[in-house]
Image 1 (cartoon, rainbow, N blue to C red):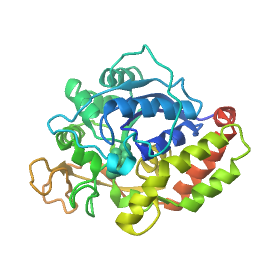
Image 2: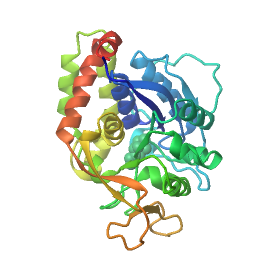
Image 3: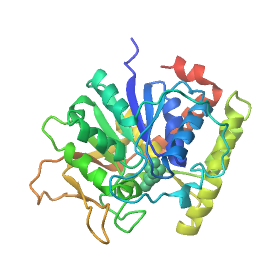
Image 4: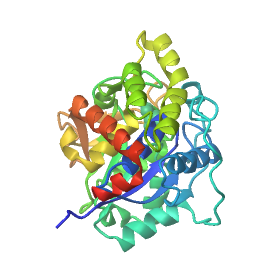
Length: 335
Ligand code: RIB
Ligand code: CA
């Protein structure tokens, strides 16, 4: 008997790596994507929502509902990451306008509704700022017990930040929201909160030559040409940006790793630790502080990723993109 599918709710600020995470989810037969909620972050809510719908359509999964959420952080003024992801949020990629929808339900309502109706089964995968998740747990604290697990891309627990020397973008963009979420998962009986931070995501790198080789392998498949064009167009400027910043042409697979680890926890090694979020520091706002030595004497509230099998994750991603290019039939048959 086939294993039960993993029920996913993905919360994204769809930029380029969120898009690759969505494609990975769509190509994973073990995933049942209940819906995608969107949040402002890399780009504004409208663009993040449009991008999400367009990327799902590219994967042949326009059937997956997308529900917009919070259009700005709880307290801070929104500062996007368009300098990384481009003004559209998807680099130079131009995807067809997704079909309009009359489903006007809100992300926070849907996160709560799905977690409750599928109590104990939903794996919630935030790949953007935690504004929607904070609103949901504030509205209904029981959410931390309703979900099976949260696997979020965010934070930096042993090294520096990527947006300030102290803070990773998702946490930095809405530190108050992140603090609410990490505190909520300190509650007795809360489900595991897995934090996939820069410590591991910066070790998972997709290279231009891997994208080019993938494009050649899928050139004669039903969805291959459109996917190959998307990969090339979405990442071209990103590679230039990263080369200027780091001197190397690499694509850091932040969100795809969180999504892949939600489906295959063996990809990462985690350690339970008490985590809190700095919200007032002039230099350190958005810093995720992990009490590795237990000096706070607090119960751990997070499972922080400290190790990753980067080669396995990249291999999974490339293999699933080939499967996706073959057409959604194959992706679903294996499920
Ligand atoms: O710091 C990386 C994170 O910030 C990723 O989720 C990326 O999409 C941006 O949102
Ligand atoms: Ca993101």
